[in-house]
Length: 510
Image (cartoon, rainbow, N blue to C red; front, side, top):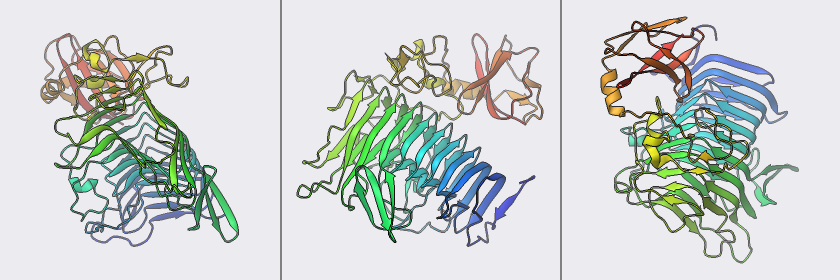
């Protein structure tokens, strides 16, 4: 797109077709807005031959009646700087159970897929969905206010890191419903769910053999590895219903559906959210009630699943029905101990604590939304309840959520590394005082200097942070102005600090 390019209908006259369908290789899609259809927004995929080398950059899909983006049968696909809003919402407001719920952005049967620096919100189903895909990663994304924010459905070799995954307080609870007309009392959206629904690309005859989903149709056979080799780390989860979920998936196909080698470590998980009276739930939840004792089939197994070095905290009084960790297994299930815990911090005691797990009732159970700043959860001397040093879970854990270096010999639990010099100021004080400060020009084009008015007397330093909380610039304020690098582009937060005061403002640099 050159300039403002929009493909689609209008709010009063929705299209009834997919808005952009592309079939081919080496496709670059950039700077396009796709809006207002009862169908799919962006559809890329063909059965044979597979597509390859697709780049999607700066594509926003808003208010479509199905998937925002369905990326199917692709080898090497990259999505960046893109967004999905309100997928499968328009026209589905009166749906009740049973209903289907397409995802915001779905990689289906794709290999070597990546999504970064993108935003997915308000979908009626999953926000981000990897199904039957291999060697995929998601990082530096904001995924929020979806009934299920991130879903691994039968995908392997998956990396999920440095994402902010959350639900917004005060949002319409209908956003937590996959069938909006159901009168259910629901928890807020799940953080991440791991399962296998036994779905096939082009047939309806799946079976589970040797930890693979085998699909047969028209004398052809397609095998997809079950969930295997998944790493979830350096993420912040906030205000979830269920934070981490493991589900047996669909067990009607013959055989053993495997979930193995899944490692969830060094995540900060803070805050629960749900409707009053929401039923029993687990902040970490494993649900595996099926097992056919006569045929030793039709079940899902767990092998080498670890949950370690995470922080789990939520309001245990308001959400007394929420268990820190809940397991449901058939009495004859062969792998009830396939999940092991270690070196986690928990807000509440439970009977399944693992090796070196600690219970810290003094941990804060909520904070302001961590979209602009993560100061309130930084581990430091003023926040000792977040501090617990352990050996790294894996050698590749070199950085934290902000991209700051981790100590390679002894690193802090949670998504953030210990900060020896941080100074914490009340978020409420910052916000109240910051409302008086004016930054200009804002937005600023080719910006080399920012000016400040109503700044109280004092010597100030400044830091500029990305919306994920990474510091990208710093310096001194001179004469109520700050000279900055004019190569910075995007939306940032500037924090002004003196010895006694601290202010923050959102800025736009073009």
